Every structure is written in C-alpha cells, then in structure tokens.
Length: 292
Ligand code: G4P
Image (cartoon, rainbow, N blue to C red; front, side, top):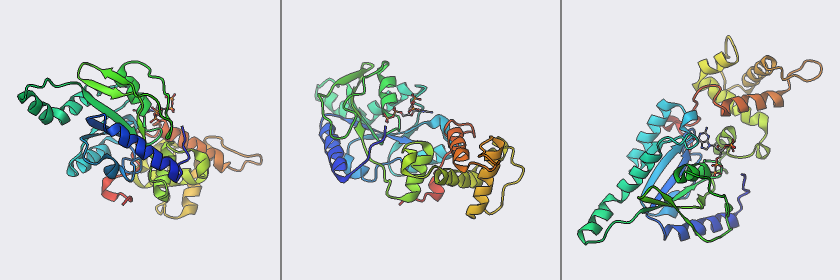
C-alpha cells in the first residue's frame, strides 16, 4: 500500500494515533530492521509522548544480524527496548507479549498493592506503510484480521483483539509517515520496497543499492553475479553503472542490438536484493548513520 502523504493526511494520522493512545498502555513501534531510522516517523517521540514503548525491528530475516545487534544497542542507549522480529514467520510472538507485560510490571504491581487485579495489557501497533503492521497483527491474533480502515483519515469502531490471556491489541494499527523528504531516506525506503518505484527512478534506486552493496557487502555482490573484480572507487557513478551493466549482461537484460537494458537490470537487482538473494543485508548502520 502506498499513501501519498500531504500535510492534511499527516495531521489526521497524528490525531488518530493520539486518540488511540488514550485507550492503550503500550505502543509497539514497528521499524524495518534493515533501515531502522529511515523507516521511522520523524515526529515519533513527540507523538507518543511518554507512553511505554517497545521497538520491534521487523523483517529481521532480511537484515544483517551483526548490524541489527548494533541497532539494539543504539536503542538501548536511548532507553528503548528493541527486539528483532520476523512477523512473517511468527517467531518471537511470546517474547513480544512478555516484553509488553514487563513494561507495565511496575504499574500493575502498584495496583495489586492497592487490591486492583491487573487487567490485560492494551497495545497499539504503529509504523509506516509496508513495515509489516498487518502481518504482525495477524500473527499476534493467530488469525487473519480484516484490514479495514487502513487509511489515514478513515475512522471506524475500535475492536480489541485478544492475544493470549494477558494482552489485547487494537485491530487497526496507527499508520505513520516516514521522513521521505530526505533523499537518502527516500532511496533506502525505495530499495526495501517501502515506497513505490514510480516515485523515484528505478535505475537511480538500483544505483544507490549497488553502490551501497559494493561498499558494505562487496563479497556477497561479487559472488551473486560472478563478478571477478569490482572497481575500487564506487563513488564514481560511471563505475557503478558499469557494474550494473555487467549484472544486466549476466541476467540477459538486453535490448535489441545487444546493449544492456539498464532499467531491466535495475529491476533484477532490486528484486533479488529484496528477496534476500544477496544474503542478509542492512542498508543503514548506527555507526555511519546519515539521518539526523
Ligand atoms: P503494513 O500493514 O505495515 O502496510 O505491512 P504488511 O503487513 O502488509 O506487510 C508488507 C509486506 O512485508 C508484505 O509483503 C509482508 O509479507 C512483508 N513482511 C511483513 N513482515 C515480514 C518479515 O518479518 N519478513 C519478511 N521477509 N517480510 C515481511 P508483500 O510482498 O507486500 O505481500 P505478500 O508477499 O506477503 O503477499
């Protein structure tokens, strides 16, 4: 799903989440483990205020485990618990429930001392489009929940979904906008498929991806496309295009006359990267993060 975000949508989306916050105890902030900052809403702290929060680094199956561990430490430094998960495969669901409960432990204990029996923890999932919110809701619910009202501005009656005995989840997630006005962020979102290719040129997106891979996952790139030697200086755009052409030739992405069809080559590269064919790749690292 792609949403064209305009200021009016953003205001409405924010207001909707603020309304939902009144109903819940814990926010589950869903990020893409490959691009935790680029897949994050730029105003998230302001919107969520001081609600207890669990960060989930989703699509962990596609992200580089070493880099993900660095991200977990990065969030811990900011006082946020971050848990790598794979919503599509559904592992870690028990751990998510346990962590949410843990976030409420002090409050529930205080209530217990006053003789109030703790109720189920009420949670809301928030995140940008395509980060895996519906997938996670379905996993936690253990069944398919109809995706209705899944647009900013569309309201409907809230339903609670039972997740075990100790947790309840709002059936519609909070949809947030990314910081796409930053070009680097836009590129990373496009590489992962979070925003539609039509918004940017496919060959530019693939160029960005190939350059990043050549810098950080050199061996994986060489191996995947049987490239013997990559140019040393990948800051040179012509060098990146040469690599894309070599990949295009390997994959038969040719135009009549035998020239490489760069658009086709770009699509092949992006499809294979998104499907994890180049191994587990993170496109953003806390040590060289380019996001403010
Ligand atoms: P949203 O509600 O936040 O918009 O996201 P949604 O759940 O629709 O998920 C977006 C895409 O991300 C889906 O793929 C979904 O399968 C995939 N996804 C969600 N969680 C994970 C995960 O942990 N790992 C991986 N590898 N993928 C995940 P799709 O191609 O749009 O649809 P489909 O192929 O599942 O039909």
